[in-house]
Length: 94
Image 1 (cartoon, rainbow, N blue to C red):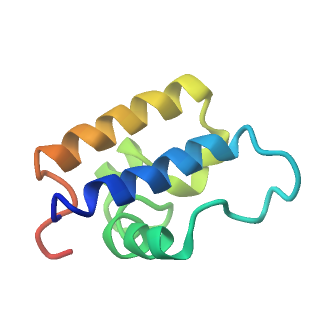
Image 2 (tube, rainbow, N blue to C red):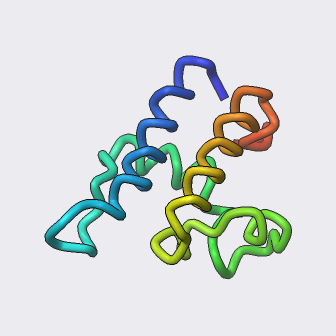
């Protein structure tokens, strides 16, 4: 993933974290469409319940994001930042 995209993706992930604190419609996503597109094409294929990658879903399941405790979300965001910064994620095919 290009270094230019990293802050863009991370801002979307931070918005996911902030969603826990938002009031109002729970089903409306606070994530901008362009960030959602990057997450969709680079993350959700493996990190969503029902994917074929059991290890990826075990590490992080975006469908369960709202069920995670705040401390877990913060830890996951730190992990996401680390693997993106180290070019370990997303896989090269993305």
